Image (cartoon, rainbow, N blue to C red; front, side):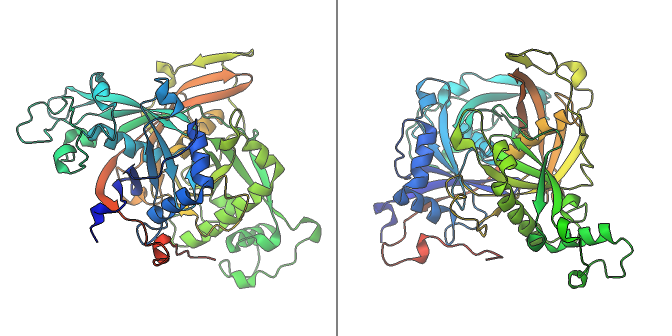
Length: 500
């Protein structure tokens, strides 16, 4: 069979702090709808379209942890000039509303590619170069040249600042930043800037949509029924109620202690915050795990089980479901990720919110001042994020065998956590915080950084614009063919999970 005479889907793959992004640049089915959210809904609800997502994300072409970004050249906001390109994010279960690591990867690729069929706006962006005064060329100490593009994600427009390569992409090209008018459909070495250089060591930054904290001052209390509690949570309850117990601290089978039948539920405190998607954030010790989740006593399987049970309980909680409500767009109102925070890196939030910058109603904006950024980078938070339940799927099933573990520090959760930290007096406006995942802690230099660069007061609620930075690197490109209809059933996609 001549692969290039059949229907193929072309992709470019990158990783951001170990988390993959498969950018679908051509061949994906047409998405119907007037708005990007309409297109997202159409993709999710149309079986002929969604099956393409499945066989691109799942085995044998992908894997359980694969993540995708479908380029959408025209949306309602590109037509009005408010965005340069659109994107739909997808994963092993469906379609998400925001993804930080994929946004960083998209910024890298869209500025690097010279293919105007993929990104027609690129030449115009290269005419608007500016200096990044916070970063210098390590060779001659001159400011790094950057450009900014506006990506229309389902949650809104995200602005991405990308450092420009300082290398030639073809032999004899004396001006690597010149505007190419080539309409080549190739994504080969000749038209992609992929050679490592000092500029690629500089981070890509994006500014989030308006992020906010919907949960109450002390978070949300979730009661875990005794029969649903995972082993480490039962051990925590036993040790709290019987601190002098003769039983082995790590022996789950020893937990036969009777508890007052009127109070057998185990309460845990969870924070809800929005960073383009809704996240539930909880400390590892609150769930009964060792404060440091890298401790060998904590297994990924146990952490995933706890996150899965917690997700089910949050989706059943009226208080939590109220917190998941987006103020303007119902399609964004669902729980996306469960983030378990290393308690040693973030020891207990203060319960007091910051006092309002000004009283009154309406909309006010507070940019960071010099006095609000006394420390460049003094804090580091470590966590692990489990995500993947789509708004159109979680209401039909509570099976989480498809839950994904984010290898990266989860950029949209950084966007959610920074406002929470500010409102708990843990961070100041403009102050950077470093975020590490369970994986990047083992590979120094691959964490994300986040800070709030603007605060907006609107009708009694604070909204924050959060800046997040990280690095993305190429891993490959591919042309995928669809499975043989009626013959290759496995080719439609399958997933192996640790639990049923």
